[in-house]
Image (cartoon, rainbow, N blue to C red; front, side, top):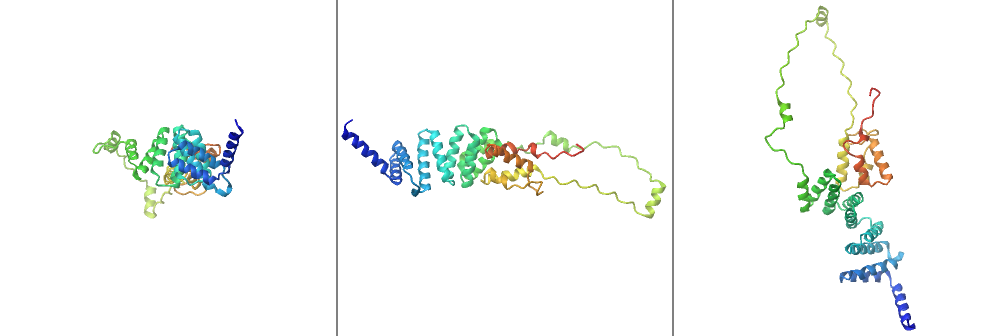
Length: 307
């Protein structure tokens, strides 16, 4: 290589390094508009490399998001996920990127992580119909048809037509009118007449006593202590989650029945089991599905001495 060519390359390299974050980001944006996506990825990379604190964290997050979207479009899923993670470290209210990352995770079979991302997306934007529909799809893949149906219905209410079709598909069939099930017919049939017991004749002592003073009323049996119903706990948590809040936020605001015996309180054992599962590395959605089920062992009443 001649000295002149080497000098030109060195000058070009120095000039490239001297360009600012803003100039590289502007060039990348222009290349993206011109559909030169490969060049745009390189320019966004140069922008990120030349970023300084004075350029602002929000601007760098935007560059990561833009580069991630281009890498996703090119099929480079692993690098796109890395860029989205860097973007969301700063831009924590970007519902669109949470949704896109959730879609990539779902395609990769990482359903629990995908569901978490969809929850975060709808927590930021409670009218994000496609995020509800994608969360429903993830639940459907896992076999959680009840959760899937609720999300499809919600997306349908937000005018997403494809979700309406899925909600109809998953809805249980309606019972036909005018027909009674065998069980219902049995329950409404007239029971056979029973033989009346012969009347008892009061003794003389009882008769004389009844004339002088009224017989004492039998003491009412003690009322059993009211035990909160676990389905009320599940309904409360489900309503909270469907409003768009994250599972962790819903569980953290639930009352423990042992501390405050209200209608929709939850067993403390279940709340503690959920927190332990999350601390052990399970996603919030995964821990919720493991713990808060209708037949949860943690919801069983404590055994008494008689048992």
